[in-house]
Length: 276
Ligand SMILES: [Zn+2]
Ligand SMILES: [Zn+2]
Image (tube, rainbow, N blue to C red; front, side, top):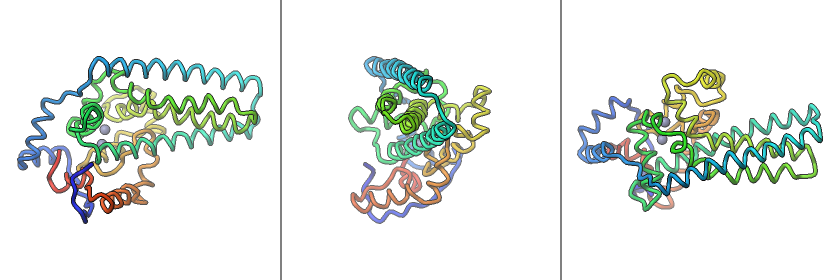
């Protein structure tokens, strides 16, 4: 958890990366953190690579089997216009839910995980924090390294879709399977979509999807990369970024955590010049 300081007041404190660099040279504590970043290693071991590879194989294997089950039932039962409409709505809801989940997880890891936590610190939290000081490094990682963890944790979503397609009522069966498949695909590929938002020249089809607003855009995500990294946490479609900022969900959750535990989110410490 973050440093304990009661009565913290979240204050927007925007700086560009250039401003961030000049700040780090002025503050002795952040100079130390910057030095650590210069020697940054992900802590990724061969065992971790094997785990990511398992995630990759299981995700694509299980998703292919489940999609075949959906197609088989679709061919057998047929689809009415109402059912097709429900499936479309379910897909949009699934994409929105995945975007929201990516935002909440990203917020939690950015602000409440410490780099020196056992195991999770070096493997999970520190790469997220390092991403703020070296945003383009994500584009140099391999596909398995970038997505293996997400594929692994998304497997229960495929199980939910596989389970839904066995329901007797075709209408709710297809709608639920569509929701879970959309949610799982977006969650599994969340970091790949995040990577696209950092590419200067992503593939043509990705650019079109970003332009249509179906994938989070480079411009939308760059707002998150402004110090102190306290907004636009959603990484999939970006649809939830505006509403979450408008209702102040993250500020409210930070206020509750601060009241209960006295801990302060990392972005508030950055705003006060105490972090990278
Ligand atoms: Zn972040
Ligand atoms: Zn980013």
